[in-house]
Length: 161
Image (cartoon, rainbow, N blue to C red; front, side):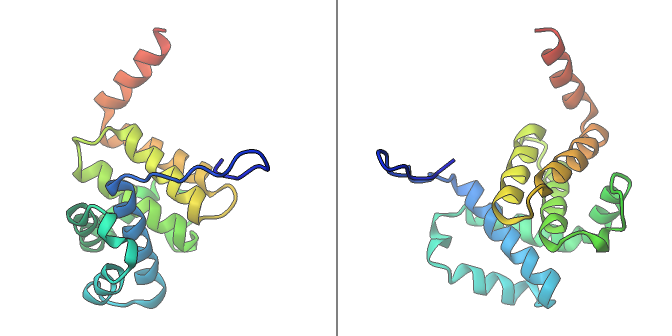
């Protein structure tokens, strides 16, 4: 994908401020799941990162704090589409799913496909080999429940081509 070949150097990855915010939120959620650090300590640590200035700070804060505030409700919403208890998911998959569920619920202005694609990319970048497939399947089912009109419109548009 972004690999250099002998004749062609690697292209720099231009990440949007929102993508960077999602990456930082994922790091924060991962840190929270593993260490139990509080929100303030996690935010402080991440804001010290050299790259943080390129992230959408407001979106990062909303995403991290929102997931932490609604964690039990998000887990409950996701559990119906999981093949195992939430606690058995890898910390990356769990964190990406929580963030994706939060966005699907709280950011209706962001198309559901964008949210799912961003979750897939995060999982590809930070998760296990096939974790992105699992995340895709779970969030796609959750999106159908949370945003039935939007999902059906997208599916109808695809089948009418």
